[in-house]
Image (tube, rainbow, N blue to C red):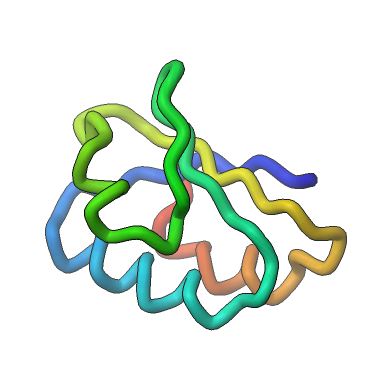
Length: 75
C-alpha cells in the first residue's frame, strides 16, 4: 500500500485524474478526512471536499508508473 498526497482544484483535473486511474487494474482510493471513495469514481470524487489536499491510497506494490502519472497532481 502506498499513500500519495494530491490536490484537485479544477473540473478538468478531476476528469484527467479519473481517466488516468481507470487504466490500472488494482484498487485505488481517495481519502479526504474521514471519507474514502473509489478513485475511479467521478461522482465519488465530487462528493469530497476538493478545497483541501486529498490522499491517494494505492493497493499495490507495483506503483512506479502510477506515481509518475500522478506527478502533475501531487502537492
